[in-house]
Length: 318
Figure 1 (cartoon, rainbow, N blue to C red):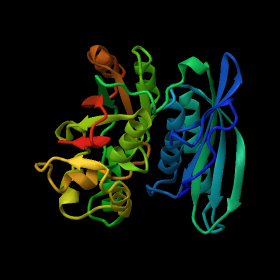
Figure 2: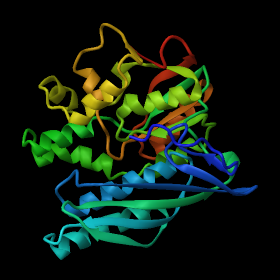
Figure 3: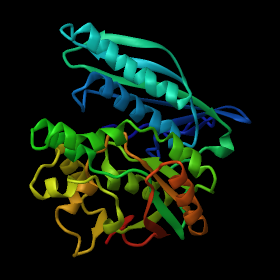
């Protein structure tokens, strides 16, 4: 993991690595900023078409998390020589479908031969500098809104181990292939103080980054955090991806858990997500309006906690 990159030495680099945000932002001119991100990974699902959809939705999510609409995308594809041509075509078709749904243009890309298939996108977007969301603006008194249930890493692990059926895995695939576009559009109807998307560092990992960048404490009610059906039960039976343990180890001592939080809840909260939802910090007086708008757009949004002045820890879980 990269630990120490230079700070934003170029004043035009509005968002860089220092706050661990979802994408970088570069000032093109006073009224225009460029948002740039890149993401790709090996298959998390068996079906090539779904793999393309999931990988593309995951990459596009970084732009939605910055409050912008993707403009141009480029394919990144690694393929073994033994992979059938029809599977390669299906992966690319799944990605193209999501790029089109996002409202962006797919303008080519690059492929290399590799031992394991990998796919993703490099995505660009443009936005007014004053309208960009970052993970660094949460304010005491804000409410925290999560737009997708967590636990898809646990279900993916269970599916690979044949501990659940492909039918049981379908709800996770449905959420992973769902763009965060409608959630982003709904959130633009209120004042968003901070936003991030929930991906590889898990719910608590990305929540911690938001809290640290904002200099606040997030109080999370674990009972309100939406979870995919079966995720908690699988965790109780030790069906847990290795990434969950690494996420928990990385944040060891940095998160306070109430004594009554069930042990199996922790690996779900640390579960590495693929194409997870948005976590938004919004003023408390706008919470209900946002949840209603989310509902009208088919987004399963839930209030999972609130923001407080920094205390002893950046995250407190009850």
